[in-house]
Image 1 (cartoon, rainbow, N blue to C red):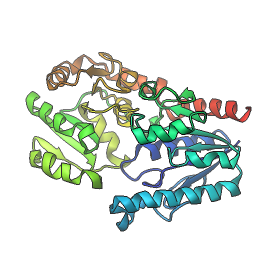
Image 2: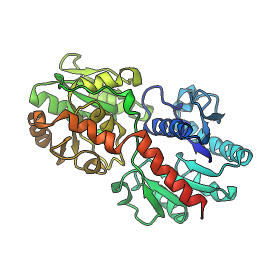
Image 3: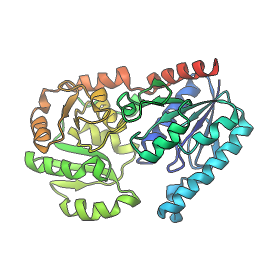
Image 4: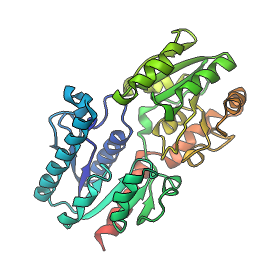
Length: 347
C-alpha cells in the first residue's frame, strides 16, 4: 500500500523533545514500513525517518525566529498546506492520512484520493466545529471515545488509541521518592495544582515541561515563583533520552488536567514504566487509566489528589505496564489503522 502521512510542521518527526502528535506519526510511519508498506512522510525537513521524507519546510517552524509571532506562525501553516497539496498531486498515494487537522480538510476532496483524518485535538472549539461540520461526511478517526462527545455529528469510522514504542521505556518495579509532572506548562494541564498537591503530601515534585510562547506569561506569574529548586524542581522540556528514567523513577505521575484531554500520551508513557497515574476525571482519562488498578481517576479537587497519593502503594506497577502492552503499543495502533485504510480504499 502506498500511504502518505501528513504531519504538523511545528516540530520535526519524531519530536526532539515535546510533541505528542509528531511522535504518534513517527511510530505509525516506522511500523507501517516494518509491515512492508511504502510510506511518504510530508513533514519538516529536519525529520528523521525511514519513510520517504517530503520536506514541506526546511526545518520545524517553531525553530524559526519569526514564528514567535503567532500570526506569522499561523500564516506559515497555510503556506505549508499549499505545499502539501502540490506534493500529494505528484505522489498519487493509495490513501492520505491527515494528522494536520482542520486546515487540510477543505482541500482534501480535490485530490480524489481516499483520505482519513485523525482528530488529535479537542472538539469543543466553535470555529473548528464549523470547519469539520462543513465536511462532516469526510472520514474521521477519534483517538478516544470521549473525544467525540462534544461533537458527535461527524463520520467517525473508528476510534484508534495512540500507540508508543514499548521498547523505548524501561519498566521499574519499585516506586521512586518523587512525584512527576510531564508535558506542557499551561493552565489546562494543571501544574499549579500539582505543586499544591506535592506540598500538602510533603513530597518532592519534579516538573519536566515545555513552556510555549503563548504560556510564557502564565509561567512567569503563576508557576516560576513557586519553584524553589528543592521541594519543587523545574527540569524544563525533556527528550526521549531521559524521559523513561524520569517517569520510571517517580512515585506517581500527577495529571491534574483541567480540560477534556483527548488522549494524553504522557499518561501511557508513565504506565509503560510501571508508574501509576493520578488523573482528573475528565475527557479520555477513564479510558486510559483503570481506577484503583493502574492509578486513580479522581474528582477535580486537590483533596482527591492528596488522598490518591496516600493510596498509591496499593497499585501493582506490573499492571500498569501490562495495560500499555495490551492496548497502547505502536503495533496495536498500526494494525487498527491498516484495517481502516483497507476499508476506505475498497469504497
